[in-house]
Length: 365
Image 1: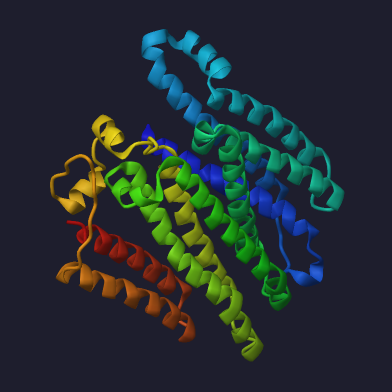
Image 2: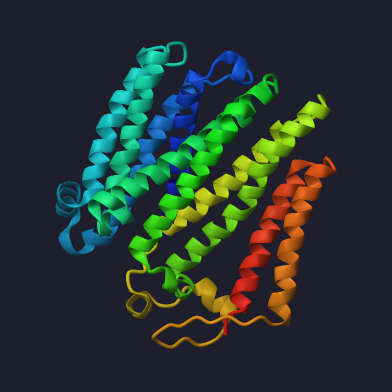
């Protein structure tokens, strides 16, 4: 069941990103974006996806509690007393009206209708943020951090998904980059800032490495490692691709943008897993109640004692892996310079994350 939760959480992020991208791109003049063909059916399915995929944590909670309370009593209790249940009811209501709205009105032809649909979508993001992990620690600050974090990522990834997978050609690509690059930079900075603020609600900065012994910390570490190749892809697609297009009109930027969008989906995957882990409010207490992360135990292989105090030391194996990680980043850039297939750069990103993760884990003593 937990793996179903991971998958549905990932798909929920994809649905939100698609909706944000689909509505935002309508405000961009035709001469500042490539020709895009977006089916309304895709928007409708994404709205239905928001309803279905946001329901799964509620179903999981009901399945966990119903053995002691009975199914009907548990359902009533979860939807009336738990914020996750209340948030889903609001999500269903808003999504219902959004679905009817996009089905009746020409949201792709009229910017006023696109704006209304966008307001509906942003409202859904705030509703889900209200019931998130961060909100359980600090209702106001946590909800705001989570909402801005979610919005920033959805805007960035949403535009990227729509343009990379639904554009018919590279027409107006340089004009597209002129406005999208600043949007992506602002979204990236807001994502990093709000992500850091949410992290500090759960753990102290000094306990960041100590949290790696827990599933929560492992998911967070992988998420942060994936950000590094995303930064390189953003640099390639935002700056190098622009220069390449100015020199070579035959250059095709779309495969590289698609590769970046897939790497961003890896961020969503790590976030989906992170969102289903017990937060590390207290490292030692969480370790005693939930145990050490299986992945950490498998790689580290040693014994842990409390209080947890992770320390690092460079050795031959970790040094080699750090060198490999650096080499994979260099190869990522090299693959673009040599006009290699974008799939090669995507592979270099995966190898970087793997080698850097192992380098860090094997440096622990």
